[in-house]
View 1 (spheres, rainbow, N blue to C red):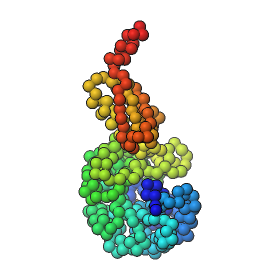
View 2 (view 1 turned 180 degrees about the horizontal axis):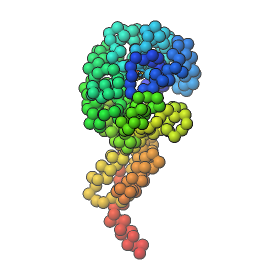
View 3 (view 1 turned 180 degrees about the vertical axis):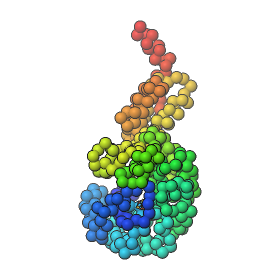
Length: 359
Ligand code: SF4
């Protein structure tokens, strides 16, 4: 029996060498000179290496071809890479395959090929539902392509995923909330949310340096992503990632090896968004009490303790600075993940009396 609770992903990056598109935020072209295409052998090697290192042999294992344009690369390479992964499915060593691709690179024939190799999940790089913003970002597809592709994917029995961006040129928070609304209508099972970072050797870098493009601040990106999380959560759509994966080159822009020039980069971006959501719920609960609160005890599942306190204790500090509330956090195994119990330990009246007594 597979332990579905525990899932391992075997990530394989498939660059789109010679991509004819010109996305404003992408530096694939400038790095393509140094990047070689992955081969069947590379795929086999990567899968074997990962399998050898997985501790829980009964966990669910998925090979994920990332890179954003899988079905746009030449057919022969697609078949080779899929075949390489598929043999591990036949040997029952992995459970499924996932790919990510462009919305204008999906049709019935392509889906038939993916079915043949037991691809389960297809993620589409949507980025925005506004055609002007897509054009401005040089994406080379429209939202109508996204609608068509999403429907075909779902009707063909695949699991649908969407990826959207926050902070594209000329995109406002309203546009991003509208994108989420439009995506929800297409019923994805999962989404990824990426705040735009200015990467070296991209058109966006040029616009940034010329003062045409102004990236979101970290706070703006967190605020917007938080609203998106509320919207997707309400519709029970899984949010599988918020923020780009931290790598050797996607790292703090002050580091020499960093490819990031500007933008709302943070190594724990997703955690900051989650912490901020916890902060809002704590404030809402505190505001419901009919007394001025001075100290509260918050009981949560041990896995959520850090979210309550916040990254570098930010939530605890903000509650103190803005609301003069001290928090005591207790880990409690009996409390479900994501839930909390909050109890007032001291009101301002108690606090004043205490001070009076000590005088
Ligand atoms: S992000 Fe755009 S330019 Fe870059 S590889 Fe994908 S489609 Fe091509």
